[in-house]
Image (cartoon, rainbow, N blue to C red; front, side, top):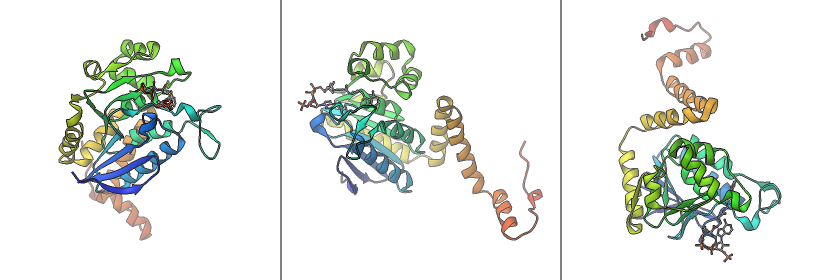
Length: 270
Ligand code: 2NE
């Protein structure tokens, strides 16, 4: 499989293959922990994948077999957030989480090794998770002086239930791939050697389906847990579809032609 480099970054890789984008956190020396630059680059790459009409599915992964992502880089954690060259403490991974939820294309976490802390939350917010048999999952917040009470806790509880989600956060244990599968935290587990093949296969199956149907379904699944922001996304999709209709175009054209619109020609569906 020949992945093509789409854009060159410092902390991540952004490649594509046959309609699939692959975004790889490339800091294996720190188990793919993210600093503000890593997160900013991921936001940029996800935005490019979102805007690219050729891309129908996005894979998020980590370089190497040891880790998907180990969360925020504790060595650059300052007073109020993670600090980069601009000296501003940031929690910009929260913006990345929201973006992954909003992007109207399926996002698949491809997890080998550790998905820990804020790295665990990143796979949680992806639409699907394909895990290698060496994957290990867990939260560490209460041990290292942090927590993610947003998607990291509330949405996790919606996926696996409150008892298990509270256990994960309150005890800070690690769970292997089979345990993650048993609790509905991942979609499937495969041998590490088959991880990318299996993930690409799932993406290719989705690429053969209606992009608009998948878009509407993602928006609908999210609307339940995203409140008014989720309804806004779904309503925006309705506006998008409405804009493609002759009825909406009549309103636009009438304005431009300085005449009264003739909406009587359009059906009122029951
Ligand atoms: C990930 C884990 C379990 C891996 O263990 P192991 O034994 O395989 O590797 P080791 O030796 O711990 O780590 C290898 C190197 O990576 C660095 C380590 O410090 C070490 O480098 P040296 O010290 O030898 O030079 N490394 C690993 N994780 C790092 C990290 N997150 N930041 C900086 N360097 C890291 C084990 O390493 C582990 O438990 N890591 C810490 C996981 C963690 O607590 N993450 C932060 C959670 S808080 C968070 O992510 C967050 C949030 O809660 C809310 C908002 C935003 C972020």
